[in-house]
Amino acid sequence: MNLLLRLDFLDHMKVFVHTTNPHKFIGISAVVSQCSDNVGIFLSWRQKSCLTHETYSWGLNVHSCGKTCEAESDHQWLGVSLSRQPGDNGGHILACGHRWKNVFYSKKDNQNNKLPNGVCYRYGNDLRHGQPIIPCYRDHQRKFGEDYGSCQAGISNFLTEDLIIMGAPGTSYWTGSVLVFNTSSRGMSVYLDDDASGAVSFGSYLGYSVGAGHFLSPATVEVVGGAPQYNQRGKVFIFTVDDNMLRVVSEVSGKELGSYFGSSVCAVDLNADGLSDLLVGAPMATGAAREEGQVHVYINQGQGMLLEAEFQLTGSNAYAARFGETIADLGDLDDDGYHDVAVGAPQEDDLKGAIYIYNGRREGISPTPSQRISGSTLGRDLRMFGQSLSSGIDIDDNGYQDVAVGAFLSDSAVVLRTRPVIQVKASLALPEQIDQGVSLCQEHKTPTVCLNVTVCFSVRSRQFRGAIDLQYNLTSDLLHKPSFPHRFYFHGNGSSNTTKGRVRARHGHLTCTTHVAYQRKDVRDIFTPVQFEVSYSLREANTIRASSKTFPPLKPILQQSAGHQNTITNQVKTSDNTIQLLENSYTKDAGTNKFIRFYPFISLMTDHDLL
Ligand SMILES: [Ca+2]
Ligand SMILES: [Ca+2]
Ligand SMILES: [Ca+2]
Image 1 (cartoon, rainbow, N blue to C red):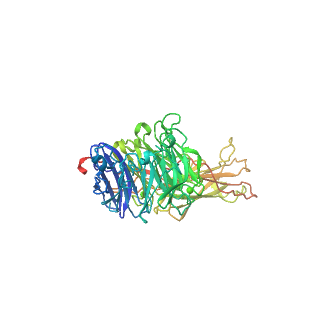
Image 2 (image 1 turned 30 degrees about the vertical axis):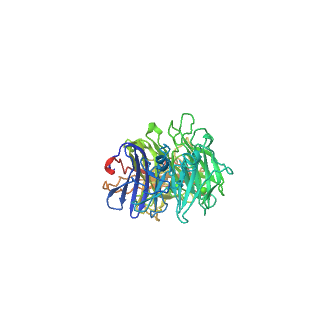
Image 3 (image 1 turned 135 degrees about the vertical axis):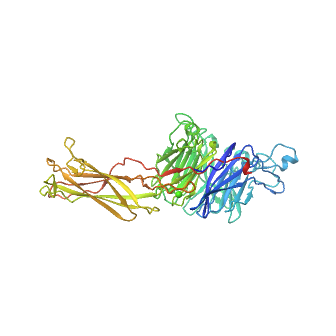
């Protein structure tokens, strides 16, 4: 846990993770009400050395912005949106301030109508030099509300390999728009809601959220724009970038008044078919109580046709939780081939906040979360935990993406690291039959019918190469008649029908142990097959201690993908002439595994000394 600096009076905070090899960064942008500009802090994690932090002042000014332009950067809210170019090797970062104003005409005419055009700064990989982009500025544009006069570009932003996507909800009297700058062709494409299309109405706030994905085909990139005020019910549009225009190719609609459907969006391929699916947050959606919030799931049927799932994601359905205010693609956490996501409910539990992990599946997404991580359990009095989420970078180089979570009201951010995942294949080998006429063993100096039960494990992991300590419970004769005792018991364990074992397994090797099961003397039922069951789990060891300045390695965890359980059964017939070895069958799993373990990393930033 590293306490670095303290920053009070935050109006807004955004976290993100970034890499400029070999450095890994956790960045925070902070909007501070008592400062006219903003500050940014970057904490860098350098491999195998120490944790350092570097601070950058982001009080950038625009020096020249056009013929009829005069910049006013005070209170521009720089950092209201932050994105990183995808990829492991770093790239550009975009930080926007949607309240940046052009005051040329307001000064000249002595009017109050400053034009909040909004500004975005594109930072290079070194995070030091920001290049301003003011996509809404037009020469001679002087009227507030009209066209791009008050477009507030950058309230949201998203970067792809070559597109800079900026939301501009104030465009044309808050109809809103999405503006896309192509860094390869240097061309700008915009959505214009003209009379002919008229898809978006006044006051829709299109561009409140933005994203991008492969909606029409795996090879094309389409842009997503949320319009949470559309018809008071909200709508999300998918646009294709067509020369200098964005054209609507698909849309999904909210149904509930005031739910703010579309205030967050996440394009993610949940079912690994190469096409992006869509998650849409409606954080103000009200069910039994008030503002519990929910996330709508749309699975892409091809050609951008989005089919809504029969269920919504709802977290804990808690009072005023605002579940769905943030949504992040975490990559594949559990190595089952499907992307997993985190959803924030920052106001759950009296503003303490929580995030939920949902796992992608072949059929889309699991309707119930695999994990809930609440701010109150992380031990730092976190508040509004989950208000900002950022993933896509493997902070500790263990092969799995990690996630940074902002807890705005407590001026904190937390890094949650992902544990390496182990896939276990277990088998339970039994003899082909039990011959009642042959007593292979001696028990209490008496010949006894017995059999070998061999438990084998093979473990694999995409990343983890250390030894895996497993523990297991072996149970005999699950099918015995209820009024009779188990027909087989294990030696050295009294006459119990269960026994425990441990094995140390290694990646790619088969590790087996054999137990002998003895038959009771008075067995009458020799027709019912004798079924054995083994259930296994990872053996918990003491946490490895490491210096507070380095990340201790995380213990691995067993995979818990759909259809894979940690229990296996097998059975054998007791008759001496029929050989019947049934296929291994899986039974219900008793426990759940947690994939993420928290590691509070940053903290608290501060005021004036950064500026
Ligand atoms: Ca898909
Ligand atoms: Ca997964
Ligand atoms: Ca990691």
